[in-house]
Length: 439
Image 1 (cartoon, one colour):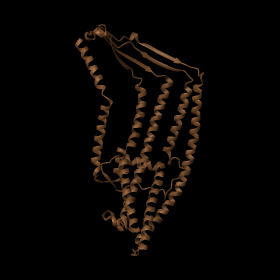
Image 2 (image 1 turned 180 degrees about the vertical axis):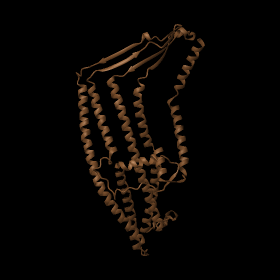
Image 3 (image 1 turned 90 degrees about the horizontal axis):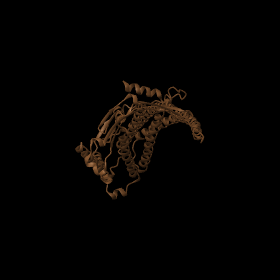
Image 4 (image 1 turned 180 degrees about the horizontal axis):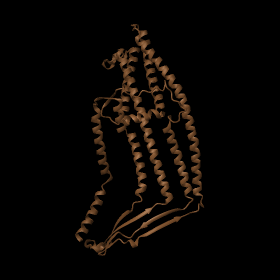
């Protein structure tokens, strides 16, 4: 026993010394780890291979790797754990304690009688009102986290579709420039030649510059939403969802198929405030707390061992009631009611804004579709015209084409964003999506 006690003290002191390393040493270790990750990432990013990616593969990769979506999954998991913890708190707890009592000068000669070892068990039942409130709050949190996850999935899928269309637009603009032989290899020119460039050549350089910038930005955005930076992604546009909200606009009065998820989230916010009001009211009423305490399940001390005895179990029940003489609870209740009133007004304002915005978006989508068709027709007509060798006519041609390409690109992306807004609200389309995923 003496040998064991001395070894125990040595181990305890060693653990303290090891745990007391300087902060700078631990920071240096973490810095080395971060630096290693940086070096590995740099080596992978230096020469990326081009990898084609279809819509289905991209969506699957995004749903698996996107960090925003993973955060939403984690929020749902934590909400479920909080709900389960309510029941785990009812499980009897065990507590171990060890006591050492010995004069400091005699620590080298420890005896078994100097150490006392105890095992305790307690059961604590929360107040009935408190238990109900915690259970209700946890269930509401799980439901709300599930809705947040569903909304985040929709938003990311819509954004991924927009990126596919942006990439398609970029490839189309790049192809048109190359097909029209407007791509100028300015990097092969000498500085003197660059300084004497004509307005037409400067315009060509500007187109090439804009395309390169767009390509770099698109590559970064695509990798981020996919959660994968290993390759330089080339998106295959065929297979993306086709939306027909221009030909078949949504019926904004169909509440069963329009914006259900958004209204569910609004309802959850209202219910959270109502629960706060209800919990505040319950503070006016006494709560009942129950508990069971026992003597040590096992005890060793002074060479004597004792076990558990059911005769020493103690049942405890308590109830307390306090009068709100300071009016603290009353003021809290008034504040919650003001929040509820404001939230109701804010919700009504949100709904009015959503409806008005939906009406305006429907009109805007029709106008954008018409303008896009006209811009494409103008560009096709311009490219079909025979080329002139006159400098003035070439300048006019290049300027018109530059403006039209930018116009088509802008309208296509605007149309995609408007369609995405309606797609977010279209519950019927998302039900089809869920059915296809299940199959």
